[in-house]
Amino acid sequence: MMTKRRRKTKSVSDKITDKKRAAAAAEVKSDNLELQSWANLPDELLELILSRLVVADNIRASAVCKRWHSVASSVRVGDQSPWLMYFPKSDNCYDFYDPVRRKIHSHEFPELDECRVCYTKDGWLLLCRKQWAINHQFFLFNPFTRDLIQLPIREDRHSIAGFSCAPTSTGCVILTVDYISSYVVAISTCSPGANEWTTVNYENRPEFFGSIWNKLVFCNGLFYCLSLTGWLGVFDPVECTWSVLEVHPPKCLVEGFIAKNWSKEKFMTEHEGNIFLVNVCCGDDPIVFKLDQTQKEWKEVTTLNGVTLFASFMSSHSRTYVTGLMRNSVYFSKVRFYGKRCISYSLDDHRYYPSKQCRDWVEWDAFENIWIEPPKDFAGWN
Image (cartoon, rainbow, N blue to C red; front, side, top):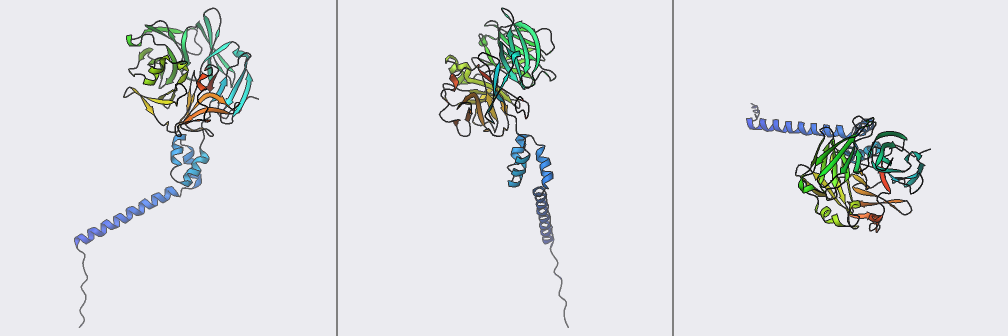
């Protein structure tokens, strides 16, 4: 007589182990499906997603894999590079140098006769023209559209001048900073369409007596003014307040205060809410600082995280990605090789380009040119 085999029953522990294995397998399968779904996105959908990213995020996404790199690069829209605008020595014919195409455009602007450029932003120039013995006519001019906006006449005694945004935008504020005495700084403001300037005198704290302000940047709704000795003043155009930050100047700025042409060797700009300071002394390698307002100090940086800076004496600019130009670099307003190449410095390579061209760039007339931002896809005048 045959005996039936008893069916082996699993213990409670075995059942728990099996459940864990099943759950783990399901989780792995789910992860694989998720990875597979992202990896196998249709090209059209991937292009749509990557095309809507800002340039910085587009560049990060391109590092995921070869396919994403190819698609991200194909839909990436690069920033428009600033052009270098040269001021004429005699007539009213201005040259504009495009560093990407290495091409010079020339155009006449008789409306700029006997004018002095003070600042540039968003493709607009702030200029002044002498009217009488001490009065000057200020106005804003766009050389790409030839639009001109007159501003009130005022006494010309300003140390620096600038504006917050294009005058066609809401809330544009034009500002001048005047050195009145060792104890007083005068801030004058107006807006497009105003009939007069509003001027308020502010007292400097004793430790800032004698500060002359010669660099200006508008950032996060505030005007930041850098003095010859490296202190940073801040003007709030809404609250009409002036203060000097308790941020000690970088040591190299203090040491360079008595150097020849030292004021031409430092540049200040902003990028996405951060303020950068570039200092060059006696042809040495540039030192780049970033303002840390939390720690109240200038911190030296060895990378710009891919940003490209365009430095000129009266105003400087920044870009995230410019096709045809080096990233993580500083481009100066000096062109060599018969107008074929800008002098630049790469923070990645720790060297100037072109090589051996760095020692004389600070000796040129700093007031002969300025970086200006052309409209997107602007190719030149007809």
